[in-house]
Image (cartoon, rainbow, N blue to C red; front, side, top):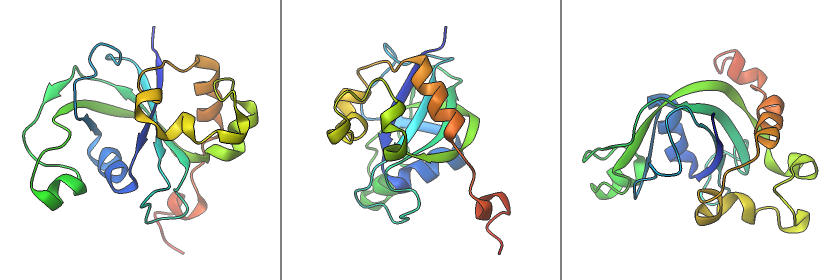
Length: 157
């Protein structure tokens, strides 16, 4: 049975995940996150170059491979220093494209118990990667994901 995860990510790195359909982390997550699980990425507000994506839940992806090790820089922050920071990687398949503003869903999500400090549930990697999110919450997030009009036109006006 698939488990559902929310993973915080920097905007530039999410763009690579989305385009290359691969996710990487500094240590192996093969024990908690397995093939067939679904991950939803949370774009952190910090250093986000596109305000339309800051603090948004973006895309739902199925994990379609086992974890593997890669020694080639892939993400912008790795290329900037020419060093691999996220050697443990998995391949992804896009399940649902789109985005949902996290703050607008807080009242509907059961895992955000403290509604006044909801950000901590999304931006702390040790909290989000260590816990499995409820299927109901994941399905609700996926349901509310929308593709913006500009994106559906391929960015054309």
